Image (cartoon, rainbow over all chains, first blue to last red; front, side, top):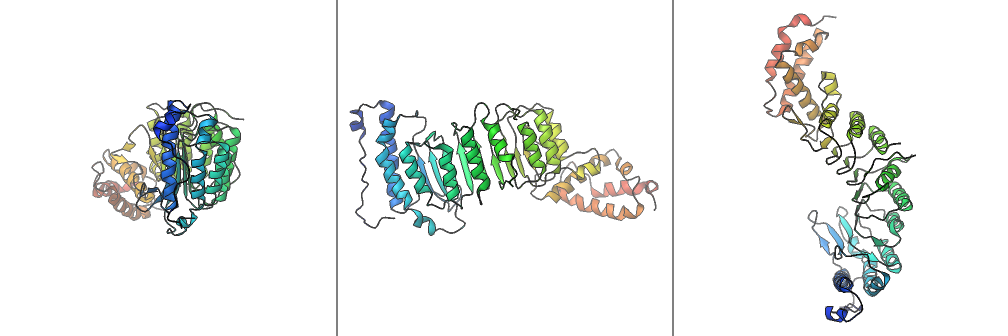
Length: 241
Length: 177
């Protein structure tokens, strides 16, 4: 729900940089916690005000929610991700009640959710997934979010719950196994309105790109896609059984 | 099955796909042949991005044959007039950017007129019309006039009157049925 109580304040504690230096985390961890908590606080406050954080990017009038977490950081262990949990909980709660902001937009408005470099533990993934399921956005972009617990099953479930989704844009999602690929392709095939799919730099070694194209194209179902982008996908053209 | 065979089989069925981006992959010349053959029967794909693959200079001819097979007027007419291919090469023939227009009829007309112009320069057009019923000559002349308008001032193409003259000057080649 959007803010009714104008005195609402972001409840999760945002540590100062100096406070974090006194903890046992290394420099990368300190930087990550500091910057990510700031991003999540700003984004949550915007959502609570009913504001989209990402507007007029591709064309005038488009509206989106962007979580742009620090780029180039390593995959952190659970202690750091657990440290971020109060912030993710606030973000997910604000996201979950953001649907009224979508409902007042014109039908032709391009609405998007973009997660860049997101790392989540299992519990937080579930919260964010549940929040996403309530929102009728048309574009979902996931970039370098290699610690998105539940992986493609989470994405596939989110896709299944959003009949408005038209575009799935994935960039540098490199941990997909065969099960992920099967799940994702099945969700793409079953989706009623998805017409645009991009796998950009998702398969930099081995069989993944071939497997993805095979799963997408080798089917009796009528694939509804109008745009398929898979640059940097086929590393070796393999003969598949 | 090779993934490219699967892809070309898919394209040949005229799916809804309008844009396919395969940039920076490992497709080679043999894959290009498969995809190019599929494009001959595909009328839906508008953009194919396939630069930065493992294809040498010879692949330019492969793409050209799919989009502008100038071995005969029929083969030009039957080429793909809808797909714009983004490759490592500039896909231009006779100063013509192949399938530049969104309108496939304009692309088709431009290609046919380019071939007529090319042959006009060596006066070889009339050989192609040797077995054409003379009653069709007015239609042919009308099409020459019409297609000349598709070139948009293309410097390569000759005046329509040159082709009309060439087709009329040797009337003995036409048959009466």
